[in-house]
Length: 274
Image (tube, helix red, strand yellow):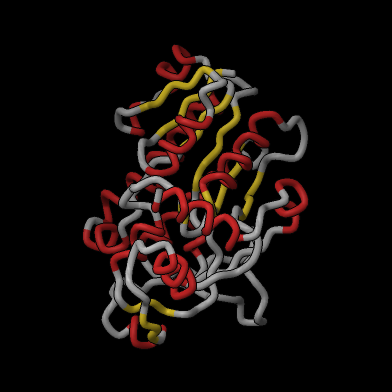
């Protein structure tokens, strides 16, 4: 299978290493330059967009560039994919951060088609791009929404590496997504002949908190014991607002059968500590 992966960040690198059994091309130029002519040369069966700007403060202070990277360019690539032929499938990585929770107003986790409640410009760009992609053609795109991606890789985007740095951590419910679950989700989409389009929430089973992850990192001697503080205390100084989100997706759970989040966290932390 010919696969084009866009992006060399944490997710793009994970997928590039995991899909070596396919013919993978990593597009490292500007996303907007991946035109229909360039795609025709590569002849992809699947295009995976794992590129984008994710730093909350940068997106706030560079709104035009963030809009271009997170909205305009992915939509342009999807249009190029659709103009290429009627078979190439597009996988787009969005974010579970489009909701500000941790739960809906009725106390339930956020489902894949719940209306977005973005609390930062970054979240707004991701939600806007999702909506535009679905409006183009919902049958040839899968939108994946992971939340707080983690792995045994020492990447600055690895949530585990972020949580090593802070003395104080909030003890609020959140979903998290391991590299293994992302790879499992993408492999399913590569081979599925039926139900694969639309929006997928992608996460490990169960709920954890940043404070609990800090405790697991402390057990592995990767940091000192964390101190818990409240979300209100965090919101008082952390701008843009940091969101807490718990995800649910019945289709995802039935199809992928994700592993328990604490088991996946312990395995990833052991890899970092090795």
